[in-house]
Structures are given as C-alpha cells and as structure tokens.
Length: 354
Image (tube, rainbow, N blue to C red; front, side, top):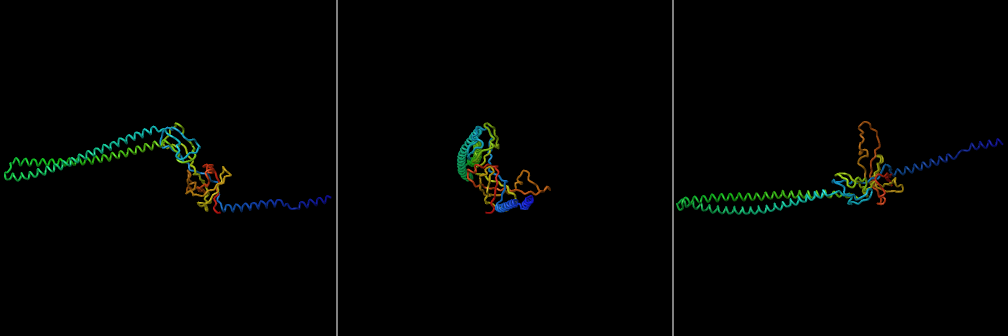
C-alpha cells in the first residue's frame, strides 16, 4: 500500500506545470499586441503633454490721472467691447477744455480784426495810387508850362520872375509825385504785412484748435471702456483711488482668442506641418474631446525667450533636447470655449498620417 502511494506521488511530481507558460504566453502576446498598436499609433501621431491653453489678455491702462469716480463692473464677469467700466473725475479736464475753447475764440476774433485791417489798408492803397496818378498828371501839366515859359523867357515875352515861378512849380510837382509814390509803396507794403500777420493769426487759430482737440481727447480718457469683449480679471482699482497715467487697473481675457501652445521636442517636428489635425484632451475635463489645427511655429525655442537664455559658448556645454512652441487653433463652439481658461493643462496629439 505504501509503495502504491509513493508511486502516485512520483507521477504527480513528474507532470509538467502548464499554468505558468500559459500566463507568460498571454503576457507576451499582450505585450506584442500593445507594442504593435503603439508602433502603428506613433507612426501616425506626434504627442506631447507639455501643452496648455493660452489666450490674448488685454491689460486696461489709464491714460490720464485723477480720482476714480465710479466703477461699473465686477471682477470675473463678462463685459462687451466699448462698455464703460471705470469713470475718473473729469472736472479738471472740463475746465481745461473750456480754457482751450476760450483761447480759440480769442484767436478767431483776431482773424476778423486782421481781415478788417487788410480791407482798410487796401482802401488806403487805392487812395495812395490815385494820389500818384493825380501827382503825375499835375507834374505833366507843370512840365509843359515850364517848357513854354522857357521858350518865352528867351525872347522876352515873360519876365524872369514868371519863369522862376514856373520852375518852382515844376520842382514842387516832382516832389509831390515822389511823396505820392512813397506813400503808395508804404500802403502796399502795409497790406502785405497785414496779410502775413493774418497768416500768423491763422496759425495761432490752428494751434488753438489743436489745443481744443487735445483737451477733448484728454477728457474722453476719463471714461475707460473695455478694449475687447471678454472676462475681467486682476482688478486693481477702488472707488476714490488716485490713479496715475499708465497704471494698470485690471485685465480682460478676450473672447474667441483661446488657443493651445504645445511645446514639442525638436526631434518630434520632422513631420509636423501647418494645417494638420490635432486631438486635444483637457486635464480639467477628461470627457471633453476637442479638435484643433496646427497654426504656426515659434521662430525660436522656448529657452531663447527665457530671462536667462543658455549660452553654449561658456564651455559648460551639455546637449539638451530643446522644445519649440507650436500654436494650435481650437475648433469648438462658444459653449465649449467658455469652459476653457488660459493656463489649463492639456494633452495634444498631432495626426501626421491618416
């Protein structure tokens, strides 16, 4: 009986254990299938998890200084382009506009005065010209009388005194003509000078108009409007606060400006082209599957745009695979885009082969 039991135990030990090879075979087969699938997948796709949602963020900056009179928005709320968001006390700027307008009125009055002077000087010039013509006519008559008296005094028909009087009249007529011509020349020059003064006055009026326009522009800056439609953020202004020109009050994340920035390794970009389709997975919304399109490539690696870019000429050179930012457009409707926020992490997969 003991011998039979021993024989049975020996036969049990001699039977091969087939469970382990089956398990190893299944694992090997699974590995082969997984490897084939990965090989096929990566032959058609280029993936990276170094990607995030980006967007255009518009800082709202004051252009004039003053005290904040009213704030017409709340942080993290949607605003439309052109919507009034902040008002600065504009009383000082209204006074400056009134001053500029008053100066413009005064300068315009100077134009009317200058035109009146031109009219008056033109009239005086016409009178002076008539005086020249009259003096010329008088000189012609006196000169003819002098010529006759000169012939008559030779044969004794007139006295020497009469001849001397004719000569004196000739000298007076010539002097009067010269005086009339000088007067006419002076009036003409006066008209020219008045016209030049009027041009200067016109320039002054134009300058005053520029001052008025500038004052209106400064006044308009006291009303701060949304530069774009989007969601307000980083509010840094309070009612009654004194703000200075160039101070950032808040920012607006623009609507419809969201895109993906994917930082691919330089060794991955061999077959990536503009216009290729992209699958996008958002970490915050695992169930959300987005589609996109490769839009363009950065002109330099991310390291070159860093605060302290690497300098390989220092001698401590270690080769590191660089990453190049690639901009990807998101193809989605407004409801989906409204869920995304700049800075969210995403995974992208560029389809390089169909």
